[in-house]
Every structure is written in structure tokens, then in C-alpha cells.
Image (cartoon, rainbow, N blue to C red):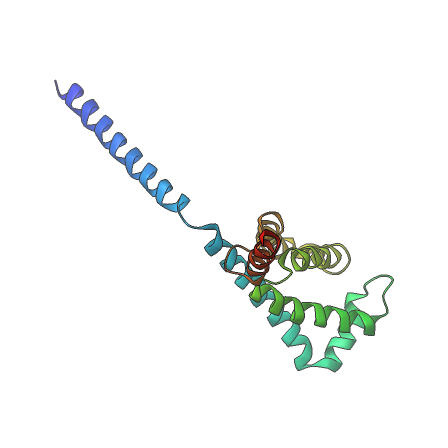
Amino acid sequence: MNTIATTTSDSAAAGAAGGLLTRMRDLLERIPYSFIALVARLATAVVFWRSGSVKLDDWAGTLNLFADEYKVPLIPPQIAAYAATAMELGGAVLMLLGLGTRAVALAYLGMITVIQTFVYPSAWPTHIQWVAFLLILLARGPGALSLDALIARLVGRRRGA
């Protein structure tokens, strides 16, 4: 008799836990993509803004790093330093605004590929996190809370008129 009661209460507990998990999953699936994209854009902007700011804080050190440590192929160190800094800071602002989001995400993914391949091959645990949120933005776009979406709405109205 105890075995049947225990089995029944275990089944009820498992059913309740499964119901709770289903409700939690349903709630999580209601998170709007616009919010997820905004968080991904913010994360991207913070990462690259900080990196660009560090370069500006010690420009002489930055030039030395590009000449002595980074050694990016085919691009002279000084040009690479200017390009990387401009891309990090400019792209961070664009990403935060959601303007040219997919283009910036693609450019950042290219930059990460170069860094991962030629500069810091052992930094993949950090880079893969950046790639994760950049791929979301590249594939799905910046979301409704962006200048890209506003421009698309305005262009759509103009075409409909």
C-alpha cells in the first residue's frame, strides 16, 4: 500500500514540476525579440567602446602594441591601430543606436576573426561570447527599438503613399 501511495505522490510531484517548467518556458518565450536585441546591442557596444577607449587612453602604447605584439598581416601597424580604434568606437555608437546594425555586426565578426586567427588564438572563450550575440544581431537584426527599424518604417510608409 505504501509503494502505491509513494508512486502516486512521486508522479504528482513530477507532473507539478513539469507544469512549472512548461509555464516558465512559456513566460521566457514571451520575451520580445526587441528586448533581446537591445541587450545584445548594448553588450556589443560596451565591449567595443571599452576596447577603443583603452586604445585612446594610451595612444603611444596602442601604436607599440600594433607594431610589436598584434602584427596584423598586410596592414601597416599605424593604419591598423587607427582603423581598429575607429571601428571599435564608431561601431559601438552605431550599434547602441541600432543604425547599420547588421553591417557593424559583420564588420565586428571580421575583426574578431582576424584577432582570433593572428593575434590572440587562445582568447576563443571570450571571442565566442562576442560571436554569439553578434550572430543573433546579424541573423535577426536590431529589433524594433532601433534606428534601423524606424528608417524601415518610414521608408515603408513612403512607398505605400
